[in-house]
Image (cartoon, rainbow, N blue to C red):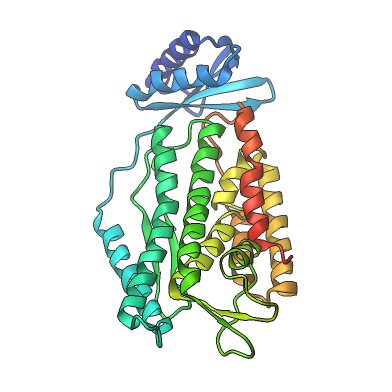
Length: 353
């Protein structure tokens, strides 16, 4: 089959980019109109790949580095960021989420000394602060690595216990390497968890300690939240806590953080896991953790997390994570050490200790 003439222009560009970055070219070829090189990397492979990326970007090309049977394969593929979509949809979702949160806050604020209106607004402010901080963490990390992302999409959930199903942003350009993918994946949960702790510390003093039987929904145990209750309120054994809406928002923030850290599919935990696992192992690991999460939910939490565990399993089974453009260079030593942090946060929110 005759190759397209422009494919040879891309080969020349790719060769120039690879040579200038310090790669040693062993073989040149074209497959399905896509130029590729078999290369030997320089000492600082990660930095050299970034030079290739910067060289090719003005030509509407991005490099992709993968391991092949014959060695490292460097390809150049066409890529142009999707055209920015209208901000009307994120704005409409934000307004709808504000409304659904307000309705939920109104219902849980009955009987508050400050009144339902103030209680509802406090709940909206607390939840929005946690969700926005989570997404801002992703946004800042993405921009620091030159990755384009969409505005946050808030998800309303009217007539539910929480009033929202969280929020998300989408990457419009791929992560250049595993360091960038790790930073983008971990920044949201870390920022959101810190915000949830702060909101909890604000809301718990407004909560009420009750001795004896109480009416209401018994929330699943979260170890990190229980430690904050002991620190702030120091209740006696057997006491119950009637959570203020702001304190409930803090508990919800920890719940959202924990669910996002499940290492499956395109969840934040899935991005983090993909930094250290190949695609096949990433899929199997995500499915295994989702099943363990489902068993834990059924055994200790009355099935509270069963729906999310099943959704995570399906995401792990059917979503093929593409990984970063440079899927060969490993994580930096500092980030390998930081891997313990999201794992610790996940365990502090899920272990029934």
